[in-house]
Length: 288
Ligand SMILES: Cc1ncc(C[n+]2csc(CCOP(=O)(O)OP(=O)(O)O)c2C)c(N)n1
Ligand SMILES: [Mg+2]
Picture 1: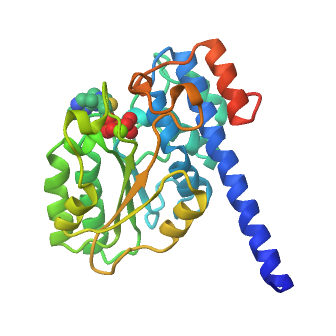
Picture 2 (picture 1 turned 90 degrees about the vertical axis):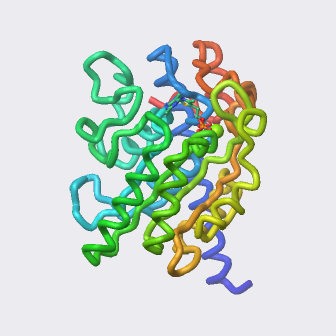
């Protein structure tokens, strides 16, 4: 390797390391929020942290916290609205509001409700929480860009259990009909929903084939690999003329050993001792 190539690979590795650290910060921040609130959805916060870190803190979304309503911005919709703590942490880290507000999560008068509200929180594009609504809204937003001949893109992050809602498949049919290649659906494929594993509840496989049959270009990646996430989101659409679907293979509870792959941690809330143990595993004293 020549010197320039060596320098480039060192800087790529430094970027990956920094984004992994930011993802772990999102993890610890959301666990701290859930601990203070006494409520929350820890498992899904932890599974989506790398995806959110790459999109929001890897500068992949064209957004500007100083002008949250900038018409040309990319739109990101958290369809799995119960993952709000991780989402708010990413928005705060990106500068949409002060990190100090995170500790008000779910307080009676806080803007940071248990599910995101676009009328209250800067950077939130759609009110979500009832599962199965984000993709339909995202399809409408992508179609709006197309009709206006605008180049902004739409990203929507769904849960995997969430895809059992039929509204997703109506929206998917519409997306392929209009050839919305400005739309990217990211599936947090952690294989657990509320109460049990997805495959014990309503089988989701073959998920990639299903999206392909609905006219999407599909790629499965490791949803905890910063380089894979960066590479995929830098090269969109997957195929010109088709909506993209990125199935991100994740682990529910990722990064915190006692929460990993445990259905009970879907809405498990960490105790003070568990929060301290998580901080050690995530490599920091405290998020804030
Ligand atoms: C329409 C609707 N039904 C039920 C719920 C309750 N609920 C909240 S989260 C959840 C499970 C979601 O699982 P999944 O989509 O796999 O999310 P993740 O694993 O990423 O947390 C359920 C059933 C809801 N929010 N909306
Ligand atoms: Mg799931």
